Length: 376
Image (cartoon, rainbow, N blue to C red; front, side, top):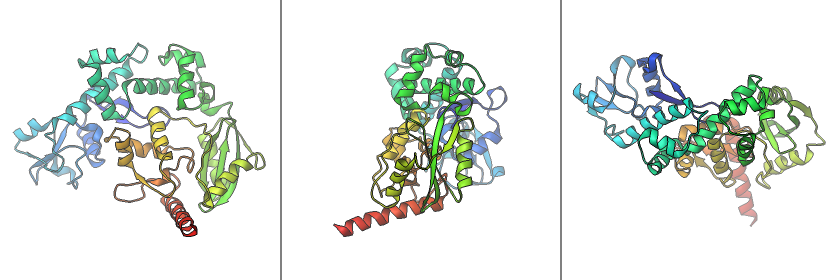
């Protein structure tokens, strides 16, 4: 049995064994139930003794107390014990159960064989499925293709070797890449900084930055020669400089207000309601994160989208949590306007710089739109 976790130091999806001997403990199951974790679909169901109903781990219904809950391997076991299926989450729907279960098993197989040649045909043969069915279902469940997942896992493994002080060549070959050019292909397609910069927390990166006043406090804008790499918000210069240093602990950081004036002016114009931010970027992200970030950049100024709506638009309706994580790990706020992503209920959830600032930004854009309409 496996679960997916999210790791902003590597790929968007990381498969890990759960519990000793690959046995999922009741404590781990209960945590999954409390967090309504859809990644455990097909792994178990839980039943509420007082109601006589059993549900999926992700069921939206209100949770009972722990001592009132029992766990079963699947619907059949629950029904043999006298429980009936929940009408709200329909745990008898075998389609999502079976899909989630075997997709996670394939993820585990990929993680255990990153050094081997992992083609779609190889994975399909391992799962005893057609390549077409594997490709379509894998992407539906996880939001990325099997090939993208393999590449993200290899990049994550390579980054771990680099941060442990291993050489670039040894890191990329130990991670399963066949050549240095394969790695740089992924970087040039938007997966982030090169291996030399990743090594030891950004060692060798030259980052200039400036700090300006804004409606959301002090705003730090940092950039390499390739583009903006950091946008930080805080109550003081020291606060935002600390955040930058934590994000790039081994980079060479240099404040240069004059040299960064052109970059800073773009943000000043944004806060004045004159334009959206269209700036070159130099940030590290996984395949899935970049898909989310690009979708966020397409949200019009003054408009909003929901986490679940973005997941649906990416063809991964079960990936709303992954979308939220991509928002939380966005290093360039405003340029990638994750403040425009809200909850399905209209609530402001989990903005890295605080929901008060998120509301300020949304209100600022709304006022700017109203002002432009009145001027027309």
